[in-house]
Amino acid sequence: MNKVGVLGWIGRGFAVLLALILLWNIWMVLHIVAWRWVHPSNTAFMSVQLDRLQASNPAAELKHEWVDYEQISPNLKRALVASEDAKFLDHEGFDWEGMQTAWEKNIKKGRIVAGGSTITQQLAKNLFLSGSKNPLRKLEEAFLTVMIELILDKQRIFEIYLNVIEWGDGVFGAQAAAEHYYKTSAKKLSVAQSAKLASMVTNPRYYDKNRSDRRLLRKAAIIQRRMPYADIP
Image (tube, rainbow, N blue to C red; front, side):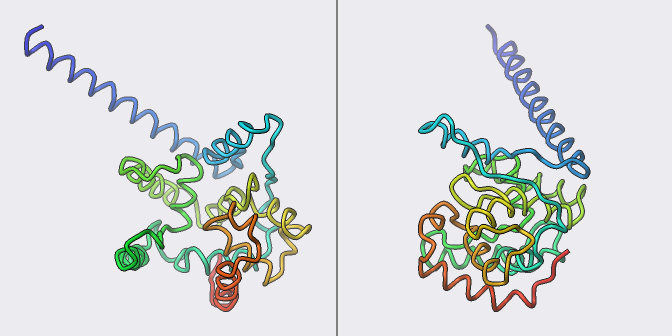
């Protein structure tokens, strides 16, 4: 095959790849549009964790139950904003100042100790993506974050987030977390309970097994002090 023929095959292959990427992104955007009215039944991250659990126990199931925004305690909402994204109502998906602060902390420590991801970024990752940290996945996360902010309002973003994030080994969403840890409903969570649940989000499976960890209790106390100042949708 001559050089022109090889270049033609490469060009066609590249065009097919771009078309597949475009179709994939259109598929994701259509899902986001649908979620203005329809609740997501599961997420990419839920699927990964269910596969992991069923590898050792084929009968394993996730603990997850959707509850509407009004059925979730304002205490938990304030705790999560105070813990994860204090500027949630003000930014358009990215907290650039927070990302810079996280970067400086990581450089100083010589390892990743802070992420700087907003609630919207975390939601994008949970809904569609794997836990990989490769640059392509980060670009996809950025695109999805922009689309989520453009298509959904802040309350809907937060409602979905509250219902799909991981809160323990196979535990997803506020209702399942409230039942799993406190034998109550998401609506009845107290200030202290909410602060502790919010402090678990960064490493939920570890804290599920280590509920009296000093770092967990220290962070919960800090979150509880910040909660009165957290603005929620």
